[in-house]
Image 1 (cartoon, rainbow, N blue to C red):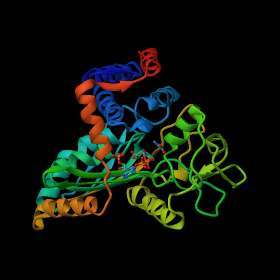
Image 2: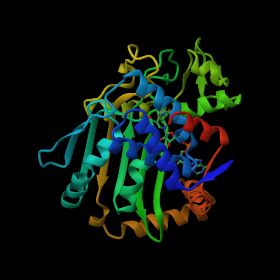
Image 3: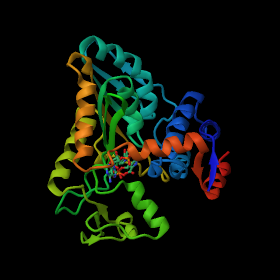
Image 4: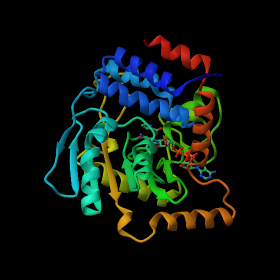
Length: 330
Ligand SMILES: NC(=O)C1=CN([C@@H]2O[C@H](COP(=O)(O)OP(=O)(O)OC[C@H]3O[C@@H](n4cnc5c(N)ncnc54)[C@H](OP(=O)(O)O)[C@@H]3O)[C@@H](O)[C@H]2O)C=CC1
Ligand SMILES: O=C([O-])C1=[NH+]CCC1
């Protein structure tokens, strides 16, 4: 294992993305996002994803350099067309307007469509929690999840993430796939030759399997939590696609672009200004303390922040193979 200063990893990734033809702003946004995942131990969306970014960029899929178009009519709901570009770039472009609107009206909603999202979702919400806001976001992805009892994948691995301020502590942030496992973790298990926990997915004939290759090759993941997770996965399709005007996961058609791996769908982000309620951050702290006192010693975000602090002191952990892989794309 080697350790790279965070800024050096961002610079390396930005060079790598520029070498694939991305304009400077897009390269920088993706580099910071990917490096932050690696730094925080969100490894299913860290540098592990780079070969798939490169393969997608080389496939001609989407419009990775597109400028997002913001449609603002003065209301709380801000609609953005990423025009085939990356969701994080569109979110950055819409952020000032979202902040103005949520401060003025107490609520703001981003309805983003035609956007490529290939990362963890916490980087999209955590900064709003740090700014004292409540943020809830959902993204749909590509159809690799069957509903319970089903045989045809219809849902994406559809992540959902939440952030809010908390007195005397970093914001409370969680971020999770709508599937029993993120697709990235199935790929990592396949690469490392590990079996998966029971109940995460089915093989091509619809039988439960713990073999990651069986899930990747014709099989599918299951939603977490049976029919309850399926309802959430469907709700995310509704909010991230039907509401925004984006594609359902099952509508992503990249057959004309072999090598494309980044779905182009939609994202919904809801922001609330809790300063309009009394003592919100203090109440969140009170509840966190109660949950810890009740015996849950690890809350979401604790592990990431511990790894972030380690990376800040010692550098971001990468394997020699990871570094060689990154350098091969420069
Ligand atoms: N862009 C896309 O389309 C997709 C992206 N993803 C991303 O994949 C990533 C991984 O998702 P997933 O595998 O579901 O995430 P995990 O199950 O690893 O973690 C989900 C959340 O639970 C917390 N957590 C994990 N274990 C515990 C525990 N034992 N006690 C308390 N809290 C815990 C995590 O905090 P902590 O982080 O601190 O460990 C995190 O906030 C997410 O970042 C998600 O956004 C997934 C699907 C699609
Ligand atoms: O891990 C995952 O499930 C995904 N990450 C990006 C698209 C889907």
